Image (cartoon, rainbow, N blue to C red; front, side, top):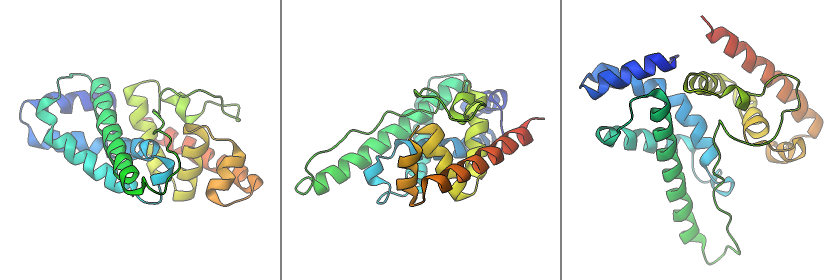
Length: 202
């Protein structure tokens, strides 16, 4: 579902006043956003053990159950609140597996506190990277939705390269491809992402 920040704020206001339809629209409009955040928050060691969709479902459930406790009024506050829920659930998942594997693991690294909006580094291409597009609540929703619409291999390379800011060598290692193949895949993915973004503009 495509939505802008004003729509989200409107649904938020109606939902807080008991409008069930507005509440459903509010949550559905943010599902893609939550899915992207979930992929970022999962510890790399857990990616093969925890399905991001499980983290999305748990976070959606927690947000529904805790909705009455949300005190914000703007779309920015709403998205920040959702990010915090996803992050807490990712931390809980990490703790669970740490305890289960404590005897065999030599060391642990904490979950990177990644966000879509603030991450150092610069893209290789001359245009703005997807992470640079994310400067407002409306842009965050648009880019997250566009990323979710990409084919799986495009989505993976964009998240690894432009959001996590990994080198192409590391991206290649993660995806099991050559560096050159990953660069070509990334260029095609960025082009499609831009087309998706342009298609969202009224």
